[in-house]
Length: 406
Image (cartoon, rainbow, N blue to C red; front, side, top):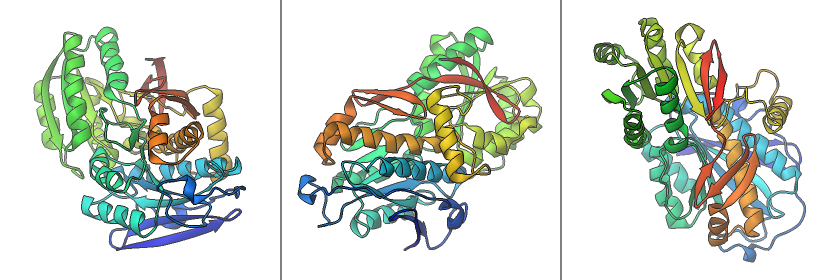
């Protein structure tokens, strides 16, 4: 059971936020939906032009955004919701996608998987969405792709993930360990003489698979792993973890915890005094999480990502200006995870334009090899794998200071 909150603003565009009847969003729907604006698209496209387009005579492209708005990754929900709305407003102002105005529905991808799957079934069967854009955990992706494959619904997955996604119909565009973690591990080995590594991550597929790759990269540098553990989602008592880390005496702790779990761990890490003596390298870290950790607990913390607000580029500057213009100076801070929703919709626009169709097969063929532009600048997808400029940064108070492109 879900309830829907509808927002009608701008010119003929309606957005929906769908949340479970019990255990609502991390922020109230009024905050998640504020300031949505868009322009109506012109031009009709016959439903017969799209094999999976089931609604007769409706010139809309119904996009379902599955965004974690509750649970540990819910901290990224407000920014991800805003950036999705910004992308839709821009695309619709340009005339939509192949002449079809986007109608955006946002579904909570947080909480128990059974609830997420129920919302996905509702989205496909009852709401008749045409495709899914997802900014959520890999555990949700693994579950959702069964539904999208069965219903032939294209599925664009946007955040950092473990790599290796080859499910028909799924297009993943986020950072992967090969390009995100490997250069950073080599840099820490060279610049900081890091040899001893301790790995700690949330207990699900992204940390499991990412750590396998990370171990290879550490071995390349001549380093070794002195400890590893996986923490249940929602864990906020880290005393035992810190005791084991202290006993292992690592040079670096690689952190694959997500959202509020990363916040509580890194706060405890800093307060324990380990931050002064031990380096940290985080995989799913951005300014939103850094604000929660606090400046006093972010010493010696490094992060690699395909996006930082501080990247000085025309594409990023323009994106941030439009974001502030649409949502105001006090809008949720932009970070790499939340920003990825914007990338996903820009990727969709480019793929559909290249394919000349929103049918499954042409879209998948176009999406395997394409260059598209978003706030991150040009992103190249080759054989289904996204490549973008990656950056290594160090926490500096409540911001990340860029060290170098990697």
